[in-house]
Each structure stands twice: as C-alpha cells, then as structure tokens.
Image (cartoon, rainbow, N blue to C red; front, side, top):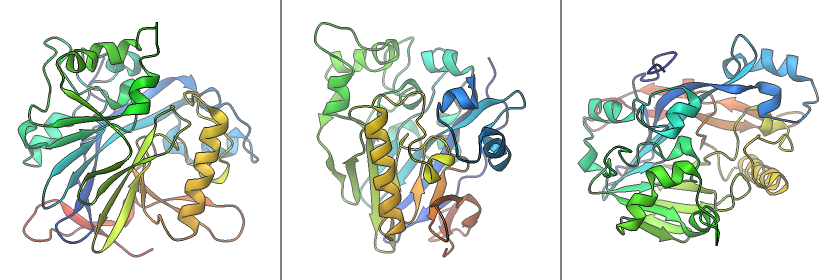
Length: 313
C-alpha cells in the first residue's frame, strides 16, 4: 500500500463566491480500481470504449482499469468551515484496503492552516467507504475533527442500517462507534449553515445528496458520485458499477445536466472526475463534460494564500 501513485496534494485553489465564501477541492488520494473501465461502467458508449479511453485518458490505467481521484471539498464561509466528504482515510481503513491507497487529507488541511479542530461541520454526500474514511480513527474510534458536527442525511443512514441487518463493514468501522456515542446528527435535506444547502440527488445510493454553496458572486454545486466518469455527462444512461438504483441514478444525472444547460448550475464539483471542477458544454450535439480545473487561476484575495477565482466560461 502506498500513499499515492502520484502526489495528489497539488496547490489548492479556491473558487471564490464573494462575501468570504469559498470552496477548495482537495484530493485525498488517486486510486486505480480493480475493475476494467468497461466493467466499472457497464454500459455501451455510442463511440465505443476504445474511443472513450482515448478521449479521457486520465480515467484509465495503462492496463485498462478505472483510475479515479478521491476528492473532498473544503467550504469556508464567514460563519463556518465545512468539509464535504472525507476521503479514503488512513492505512487502517477499509477504503484504504479496497483501493490500495493511503489518504493525505489531514496533512493538506494543515498545510492550508486548517487544523482538525477548525472544522465546524463534516457533511457526507453518502456513506460509501471512500467518502467517510477520515471521519474517525479506526484504532481508537475517536473523531478526526473533534469540534465538528457530523451530518448524515437521514435516508442515507437508514438505508445503511436496514431492520434486521448490519451496516456495511466500512460504516460499522468508521461511523457506528460515533453514532453509539451520539456524535452523529441525522438531518433532512436543507440548509446546513448560511450559504450551504444539502439537496437530494438519489440513485447512486438511496440517500445520496449534493451540496449547493452560494455567495454573492455565484454558486457551485457539489454532486458527489452522481457522475463518476465524464462520459456519463453525454450519456447519462451509462451506469456506475456502484449505482444502487441505476434507473434513478440515470434520471438524476439527466436532471443535473438539464439544470446545467439551463444555466442554473454552471460550475459543478465531483468526487471522482479529473480535476474535480467541471461544467456542461451544451453546444452542437449532445451535452459534453468540460473540465474547469484549468480555469482556476491562483490569485490570493483578501490576504488568503492559495485562493483563486474561476475565469468566465
């Protein structure tokens, strides 16, 4: 097991939304999935998988497997510091074993001047193992972020704790010890803090949610695992292997693309797409994924190092 196949800790750039509101994408790790790309996304692209592999080379290993970054997002507002998802975690987590990586998130936060005790809330888009890894220390069951409210959408928690059945092993390892001490809050979609709103985006999991972050200058939408490959923007019916309800996940992807092409959701962030930030190119023909990672220019505002603004599309 290695810390990363490439160093994921590139300098963090924030999308500035005005009024002291910013969102930073951080890469906890870069993983090479066990499944071939066509098995990780069991559908048939119109152009065929060879063309898709060539068009999106960053998503494929040399031997044809799915390569995925594991992104988390740090949201800062005048009132709160919020972490959205928390990656694969330390070497002792189930996610680290499954993906053969060790996460780097705490070190990246410290480099940015954000200590664990500075996180006010940790919001989970859903409870797959690569989104909850740093929630607690598997060896001590202690919270990684001691002051933070840990917020889980109620339908997602209930789906992971069905009557008469135990939860998935990673939930049992990382979150159940916290729940038993009353350290988790089950919430409904809605406002988390001023400017940060949880919205349902079901399908990948029953309670899968997105996070809308708004400021005076604009809005970004963090869509979790609604999209796990750029080709799904053009062809939403191509499922992810981990989609629990493929029909509902397809509908959710179509709804997001519609919101994006209508001009409502113009900048999106995803947990596993290259560069994290993207938009929908709605030119001639079908909608297409457009990376916006290179549209971020490091331009420290208000004395805060490592912040950036998104250039106009």
